[in-house]
Length: 197
Image 1 (cartoon, rainbow, N blue to C red):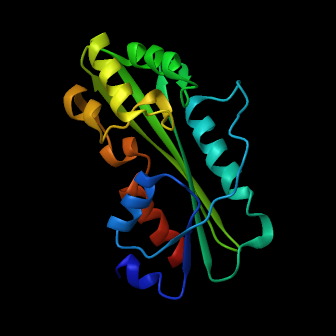
Image 2: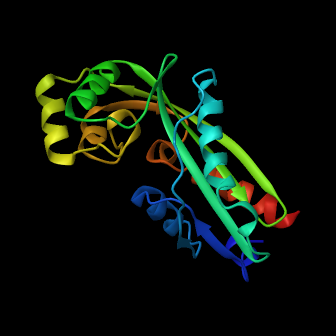
Image 3: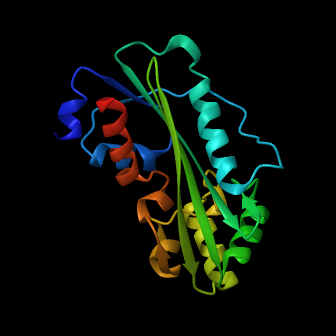
């Protein structure tokens, strides 16, 4: 059975202001509304990389507490960019974004997205990891990208669907959509499982 039919009668809420996540869920054909709660996006420094992404996704999910209705389904997600053991969050300013992109230039990094699906009586949390390889970026290319796209709301200071991804992405291992911020294939499967149970 197609998930879209299985979700009939359910009110799907995407708890994310991210235009990329909204676009991907829309393209999956799932009707949803956007409603997010403000949460502190800090996490314990001792957490492993995939655990940090899951911790933040679960924190966003837990913010809904007992308020999830019997016909509601909440989706929360958080994406982090990792270079080795370094976690690159959203840049604080231009200089911080420059620093991050210089670190990613010519290197492999990982993008990890943690996702939680919550109903009134169940919660499924999972993560997806994608390896991303960037070409060597010149300072001029980095400056141009930051000036034209101002990616200060993005982990690792870049959006793969933007100019920098078109000209700088050499290859990826794993889900491209995960790098955009939502592993939609895995999400589709997990939604099917939570509805079927």
